Amino acid sequence: MVEEKKLLNAVGFMVGHIPIFSKAKDLLNVIGDVKGYRSSAFIGQVFSPKKGWRYKKSSCGGGSVMIHGSHLIYLLRSFFGEAKKVTASTKCIYSEVEDVIDNIQVQNKLVDGNRLAYKLREETLNTELKLYSLGLSSSDQIIRYQDQLSLAQRSTIQAIVDYNKAISRKNKILGTSLEKYNIKINSIIMD
Image (tube, rainbow, N blue to C red; front, side, top):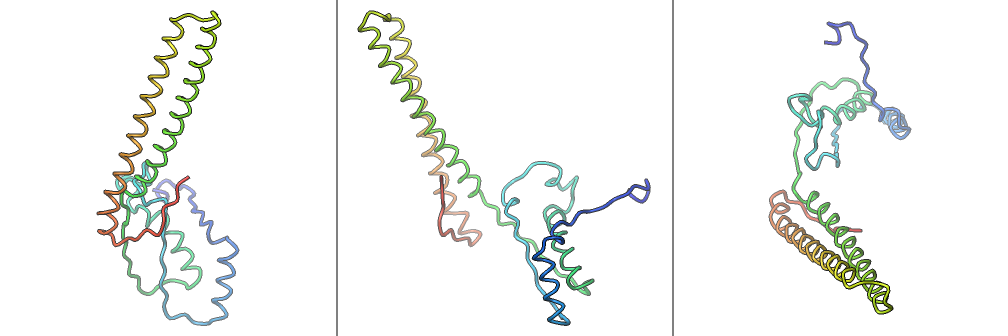
């Protein structure tokens, strides 16, 4: 299409301009002739389902190999020249673990937020009770604040239930998905 419509086209391979890669190329020149090499690219941002044209086979075709792998190929060509033979394989190690961990963190924040809302409603009710004892409030106001406190309590309990469900889902997935993909987790760090 570019040639057909006589358009200008360029690709920016930024990694080729990072100083450490220039230094690596200089060091390779010192080594001499390289007869073969092996390379790998690990891309963390594609370990979970993504949206957009880059991740649709119909509009992008090559997926992460084409999008991210092209940068690695650019570096290898600049280091070693044209390859005489290429073999490749891809392995998708995405499991639901990342999504579940993200959900746990979200649910944990919801628990914290709901507990804070409950505490504020409780303080508001206590203030209103003091005003009522001084004759500066009505029973209608007290009932309204009690209802709000009750709703805040219900929301907090629901948030805790949802958090526990997320933990349960994580335990289920860690017990099956990791074994399936032969993945071992050394630690999980949460805020």
